[in-house]
Length: 308
Length: 243
Ligand SMILES: Cc1cc2nc3c(=O)[nH]c(=O)nc-3n(C[C@H](O)[C@H](O)[C@H](O)COP(=O)(O)OP(=O)(O)OC[C@H]3O[C@@H](n4cnc5c(N)ncnc54)[C@H](O)[C@@H]3O)c2cc1C
Ligand SMILES: Nc1ncnc2c1ncn2[C@@H]1O[C@H](COP(=O)(O)O)[C@@H](O)[C@H]1O
Image 1 (tube, each protein chain N blue to C red):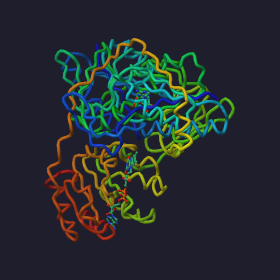
Image 2 (cartoon, helix red, strand yellow; image 1 turned 90 degrees about the vertical axis):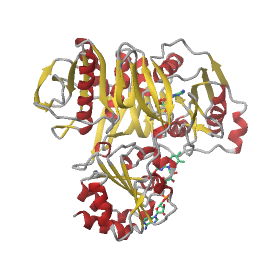
Image 3 (cartoon, each protein chain N blue to C red; image 1 turned 180 degrees about the vertical axis):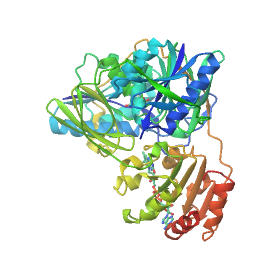
Image 4 (cartoon, rainbow over the protein chains, first blue to last red; image 1 turned 60 degrees about the vertical axis):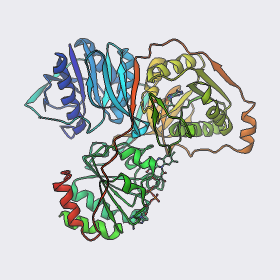
């Protein structure tokens, strides 16, 4: 019996969200007296264990369908009752297909550890972060995706050598990838612990230099409000909110963003929120932990200096 | 081209969410077509204008959703189906959609990237798998050319261009199209467009929701004077301990 953790690798390392998945799966495995087994798709020779007892590499996982097939085979081989995945765009697609293959109960964006006495109950955000609910997973098998920064990573533990596993899946031959554009070297927004975000208060794309400077001194990712990405001032994948990326970093700095309810929905589970806005009545201050009432064009450069 | 668009019935994005016991407090709430579903619908109508064919909208829901289904018809869908059941989880909904669509010969089944009430992001993947169709999500652009759809989809930290054979299932998001507003003529004609209500198939829901709660309020905002940014840095380091 096993709990399976699907782990994503970026630049040869376990992504932060996957470290959390490993820690979560192994803690859960321990609680129910099973083994925590990690599954990776990329070529890596070893990964920190985070309490897992082994990590296997599937030989083919090039798209969501292939990955779901390979994971289903491993889940069967290990008689796994539970598969935990990070809540990335890719893993979300995998989880949907996998849940049908395993005839499992599925729930995405889980926060915190499940209650396992009697039935298996997890908490998740609903209404895009405006509320929470408890979900009982009735199926004998379960698939869940874990919201970033909702469990913690704990001790990295000793490195585990990644074992080869023959499980394969076949990619969907009806879909052809013809091109790809990926931000290079930047910190991925959904993975970031620190996020600097700006809105229409910045007036135009030419003023983003200071936002990038601030992000750079902090080692933060950059984000923006919806009108900013709609106007193409910033790339679409930076847009956070109810209809954008939902994030839960340790620190969210909002510059020149009014704090509409749709914006707040995507960022309100950030641990600490800082708001910089000229308008003392901006609704964002009501959702903030720290605020500066002032002109971003003066405050942000001074903040960058203060951080150096 | 035959297009199916699956729409959700959700509170307006400006709504404050509260609960009475274990049910959503619907007093004063305005319900809308899910914003992502609305993008899917808008693109479906544009594709129909380009290529001909029909757009059918589908909702799994109770009679209270008829109002947003009529709106979708007013925006330009040709006909509608409501599967008469409380949507009690992603698998339940996916199974209803798959059962309905399996022998109808749809070329495209368009959905939203996710529903903004339960935020599952699962139904498109499940429907694709149940029907054995390719699934592409979240799709930001879509054009149809012959038997193929050319799409741009979001990936973590960027985007990808893909081509897929029809029929296919897609989860949509902006900027695939601009939301459409019903015209007066659309509203008039919507009244006479067909809305078929059909019973659900029996399905094991596999999940149960309970115990709704609202997020804990924040402790309040500590203000730092402009010019005193050093103090903010100090608070972030030593009080919040986030940098
Ligand atoms: C269905 C729907 C879904 C939506 N989803 C989202 C979503 O997911 N995410 C999202 O962000 N929005 C979303 N919106 C849009 C949302 O309603 C707001 O319009 C948007 O969030 C406002 O963006 P903003 O705060 O950047 O701009 P504004 O509201 O224009 O605010 C600009 C702020 O900058 C301040 N400012 C001006 N000059 C300065 C200066 N020099 N220094 C400092 N501050 C300054 C102003 O006081 C103001 O508070 C959605 C809307 C709809 C209808
Ligand atoms: N009750 C429903 N009726 C019709 N379509 C739905 C329903 N629930 C979800 N969908 C579709 O599936 C998409 C993804 O929903 P979800 O998996 O719940 O986030 C939505 O954007 C809709 O297009």
